[in-house]
Figure 1 (tube, rainbow, N blue to C red):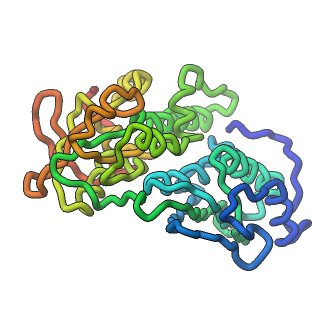
Figure 2: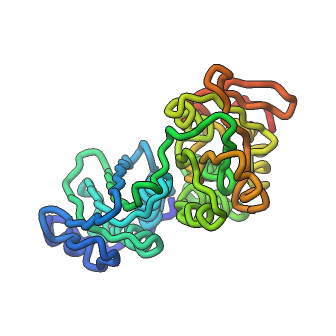
Length: 355
């Protein structure tokens, strides 16, 4: 859809596996003192010292997690890395090592893979992470990326999903729903293109939601902010599957209930406007959309005054006893039980009432 029609194409077979790895990783240098050995050996070597090591893995599959019709390869590389880093920040740690597994069919030349690695390289530079290894292989079914990230944290600083307690406040960073609406814009323009390839995509005015979908950022600033404000989360998770699903993860692992309030959920005005245009309910988009990669966490109620005036944080509810259930309180003061539906929820109904 937005591709260069005449790119240079070097067959992967021309370089071979080891030559390809060298070509893709030549710009990566070690930045963290904890990393003793990166790319180029059978395993990376890491000195944890007094820290604990945090590890997370994500896989991205063409046609399932991304669509080559509108996902630029550099953005794909950046996003794949950033969403991995987000898992480490959600544990109150700092990502330090990245491992990239990549499988590609022969329709992807070396230059295409280089673009992916340019995006990964940029993310590593932005977040101060070292590429320390990985693997490449052939694929018969398109492009597959599997990324593993290691991070460090002091044992006493690690935040789990399981620490929320009744009366804790539920807080979220940034705003929610933009990534899903960015996807809706891209899908609409793809359908227009399929009908008439000569039509130019109408993306002007949608820059914010498109960036949130194509090039999301991990919230590395939130852990530092909370520390500066003098509070530590009792539980935390990144919002990857939608507010409802991710809050339910916290409640389930903490053995609690919750109340969140529709009127307190932070939504950007552009998301409201697009929801009207697409005839989607904005609250449903936030609850079930996902891929926002904001941080959702709980803090002791006595720390409310420490965060209440910060523009990056919104208190959206509180934790209750498990027997009290897990509910969204609407603007009409109705209690609606939260369900874990994730990304598939919004594909099943486009008849939601307007917000």
